[in-house]
Length: 258
Length: 258
Image (cartoon, rainbow over all chains, first blue to last red):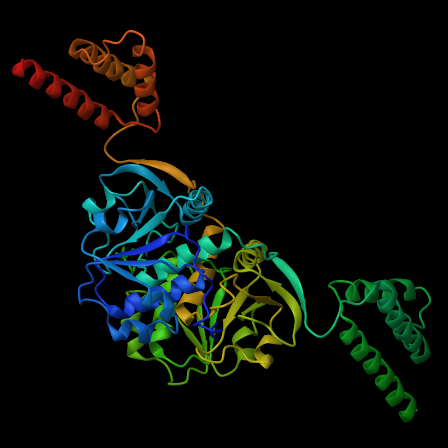
């Protein structure tokens, strides 16, 4: 599932959208793919605490698939305390918190909370730890809430950009209104029952001519089965036009042969 | 958010869990990271249609962060038709379907549908297209349902493993029962109101001794504010022990000085 749309043209950042804070990230590529994941979910504010190999690094821009504006605007800090000083609420992602006493939320629950905090015009941030070790106890002690993703407990290994994508995705969903199911109808429209009935009459007439429905006893059931089949899902006008053609052609062919 | 737990020890595959079908994937690394993303969401069945560089490829195993069993069991097919022949329901992921007339579902809606299909003991599969181009029209014509992720329409670029991760994550959530918010209390317990009251009495007694509450008029309000503060969130027994110590120490220090 690829295909980028105007990577440079990201949505304008909301002043109270969550800040993504990468704590001591190791690889510039991961900072770039993090920016890409943020862009996927409509997040913009990126802060980087003590990047191992310094900042800026060209490889990050290269790995971001066009999410350059996020990297251009990224801020670098020496410590977590500096990075969160102006924030009101801090979340920390950690696969399996230990020896901590803190509220733990799922990604979905945290996204709802982040949205609520944002609606109150408070600034929030999400801490993501270094690639290998994750956040240390000192980092987590600075967070109000821990986030643990519900994922296969036997295989929690998630790379940095994937961890960011899950939160960015859940953040985007908090305001998304896409129906869970809809019929895609580009350049065509769903047929009305009348249009469907026109086709059914056409079909049944030709089937009568062909003798297919000659058994008067079975005829009602056979017709009903056909009706059930053609009403199982929505049919489009375009499909009905095609079906009319199919029936006519088959009929003509039969007549030509006889 | 990293840290792998027993990558080799994946959950046993459910016979009706969805099959992930990579159509004409280009890079072996992406097949490996796809296996990793599948493992994150508890998916196991992987099929590969016409991998550009052939199969097997060592780099896939290297990129899978330990999801080897998924790759070991992966099946390779020449065509999409071969890969889906034994399935009952086929989903296809595509960022923005065009010129198609088909039901389109969100990742979440599709996951619920996949779970329902699985519960009916029917086999389902999800098609993921090649890195650059995505699925072509012929591929999509073979799917019953299209899946389009709700993501930032201005930045849809999603790499293969990320696309697989979103579906694997949603699949996992369909059976996950983690509460959206819980208090993490390793090695300690939430304090009872009685334990909290013991501390409040201790605190108020020492504050009375210190003269901090000497203003009889303001005293009730000040005490009430303290109660509000200490009841804002759950307090643990461990924290109460610490707070008792803090109050006693401060008191002792004060007495020592006077």
